[in-house]
Image 1: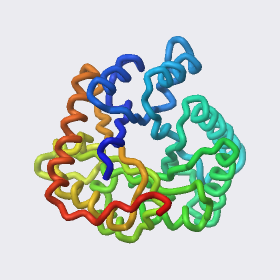
Image 2: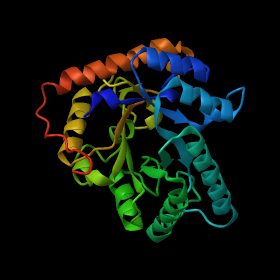
Image 3: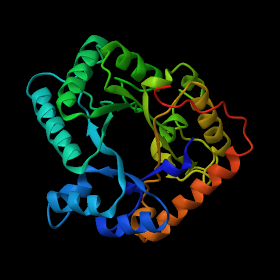
Image 4: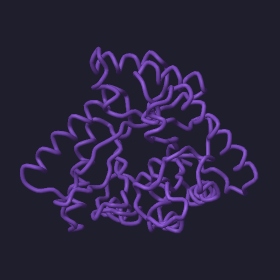
Length: 288
């Protein structure tokens, strides 16, 4: 794991884009994950927002996020195709090499694997001329891809070089997949890994509802040992994609961006300290 290149998701912080950029850079982050709303909500427009990012000198890891694309039919499918094209245009404008795509959660999405695979292949093909990778993320409440094993099966079946899987550890630890699912993945098909932890709102652990969990940075939650083990297993299967930190929650949304960025910096130091004592397989150099 190359800690110098770990990104911070700007969605973890509140405030104007300028403030979040400054807070991230001041705390040592030189790579960021942005949301499309960061651009379209900028008062000076998307062009000015993209120029602001370019002038800051940060590297863009990915843009989030396309939701509910696969498994749809008729006008709704065509509508989502247009939305996907718009998001890819934002990727090009921002210089984001990867578009994060969340598995469909809407009730109308077909669970037919063949249809889902065709849609993912279509999405990846649309992204080729724009030189964009598609990172497909499982969502626990999705009937289409509720876990990373199912998501990767569909990605492999679609068989597109620019189509891979994204792992969200916050989802992984609150779903039925668990860490063992990572062992079944192909390292070269994993494009992004979001590192976050969770805290159960119910101290007695009586509810399994994901709404009863608060997403926090690594080191602040209940799955610290699992996070360290996740990184170890990712290295073992040859993962060489990008890591990013994400702790989007309602509390951080009402706190100064610098405070949250400082917590992210502490989380990175926590990961460094704990992984220093873990026997990691040697990092495989991309293309070696």
